[in-house]
Image (cartoon, rainbow, N blue to C red; front, side):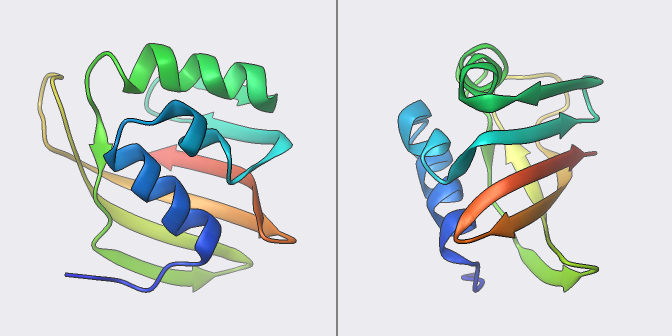
Length: 111
């Protein structure tokens, strides 16, 4: 199933499917913040986001495949399974993106 996502989110999802760290970083603002509620950590800025992707996503080949999207209170809420080499795979996640000027400024990740 194909869902309509804003370009920065679609670009992030496509890069994640390729496990392309540079591509995953490209749609984020330089000072973007990611709140990963699953691991209880916050990451701010390109350097910390790179660390998140290189240490938490790539080693376990975690690929998020959204199956629903909606706008809610100024955010884009995207839900779907993530599959990879980690316990419990696949797990269903909710990603809440805040966009500004065609870049992702915040992302909250929850199970």
